[in-house]
Image (cartoon, rainbow, N blue to C red; front, side):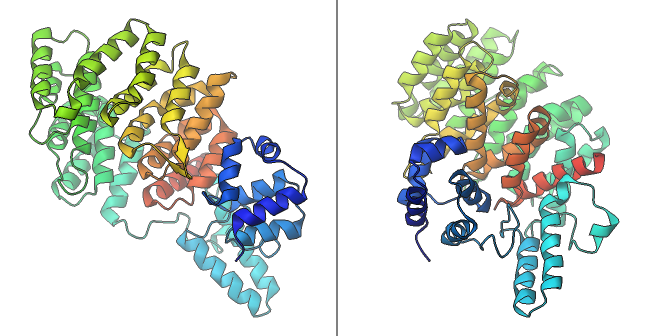
Length: 457
């Protein structure tokens, strides 16, 4: 198979185009195209290759050459835009098409191709009687999720969408006590606490207490704990005493939990200053040598933002980018607070800097990148504008959708209903990519959103 980058460069030069011209037509930075041509990055999917072909006005034979160099079937054989064979149902149908086509039954092969087209669109439109016999299943299910995991994931989707009832919280207790829930569902359960507390405050505090002590030394460490702490400002409006207990440092809490505690103490209004200072002092005693000064740094940064010293805060943030990554994590977590201020565009430039790529991969450590998804609701709100901040917000959301860390892609999938409501065309583009994501939770949630939208149409 020919090297994709070599073929891309040759076809571009044959078309008489420069890299910057092709990049401008596609609406992407020139370095992104350069990485493809040098082989430092591979095309993400079939659609991105077709977008390249369209930008260069390639003839059908040239488009097929480019597709084959990228490892995709030629467009002339199966004209199915967006086809990605990572989905089990689509892959099975595709192989059946190939087999039938080779046996000389073009009519039946054409019918199967049409079934594949329907599957690629199926979650966007209501399933009709005529389609029923063609689809192997209305919703491609991840093969390695258990029935219980699927049930809890569906329930959490309903809770986050505001479609659940108080009585359903009991299912979460039962699943949590079974000890079989994977980290992703524990994480999502903790993130749902601000919504759950509106349904049943007492049950939510019991659930939060269980999750606050969640710890796995080999896998997720204290990630679930941190998300419980992040929910405390919302919980304390229902019961301040029980909420503040959740902020008390625990043995085995990691520095990322400490960061969340500092932020929660800052955001809770009217907290007893003596009690708050006691918690901060307990955190300081647990600081590791390389983290000394983190609490003071973050507290000062949050105070600057509260006092509307936005430019000064940005200056401090840029300077911290050369420090230990725990300080860069503090910066990333704080940037979302600037997205509804006059310096939103400048904050987004810094966020994109922390997402910069080197040799085709995001250069920054994943623990610095992960907090960026906190900003998703504000990024989506910025899409309503037409200025620089709106363009940069769109770029940032694309970065989340392309992050090799599934947490960012799952966050985009969770916010897809809001994205589709804010910018339907942009949301559709993201959904097309995420529908065939390698992560089972991403894939399942996007299909679920599309199915619900189709049933409401």
